Length: 292
Image 1 (cartoon, rainbow, N blue to C red):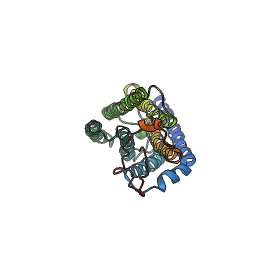
Image 2 (image 1 turned 180 degrees about the vertical axis):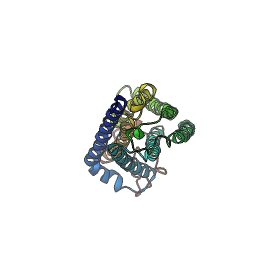
Image 3 (image 1 turned 90 degrees about the vertical axis):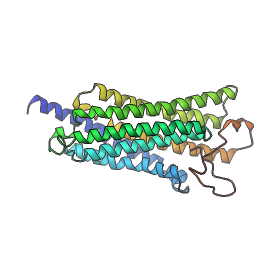
Image 4 (image 1 turned 30 degrees about the horizontal axis):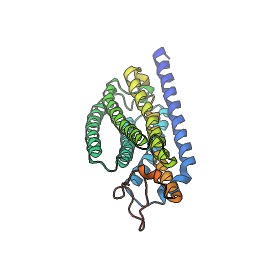
């Protein structure tokens, strides 16, 4: 066994360990969040966010299970499928972030226009990158060797997709930061507990997602061919976990506010529009209020 083969085997083992580790993390997070999910999501009426949540929560199990199995067996015959499926799953999770930000801007048409244009541009860039990427895979896919689990050198074209994704996430995060600061300023630099939970703690999830996208772009820029897929699993899993936790968080806050609302004017700075027609239909005379 020559040095190149040993190097490939070592690189494959590292990526396999990373993939299996994040699959375990995905399962663990699902297990500890299941009780909240049943109450906040399963028992709610069907809506756009419920569909997006369920897809974002459970689609990564399919992607990660297939990826882990193929990397363990060193025959990545479904790399095209898992790459496209994972990218689509990340795109759906981005929709959750956009809808969340859209809601805290009280259904602003300007924000809707920004997100609509961003989504079109990002989707167009990713579709082009995926077409170029899939065209480069067949030569290395299905050979039965460990090298079949490495992204081809032409996969650098995927940088276009990840950079577009990163730009979109920055837009969403900066808009959320601005709204949080604006409300903080209007409240006299004092947030009530509920407002802090809705905005400040919600923003925390955005800021946790960004580093994974940045790291993936950095890897594609600088890593050798054997490590180009190193952070694919972390990116997919963390988008799923953090976006789903964001949905559960804001629904917990909404439930807390409805139960403990004593008419305090401090909470008047909360959004007046809750995307009822998009996310949750009226349950009774009083709508079930969700900030996502």
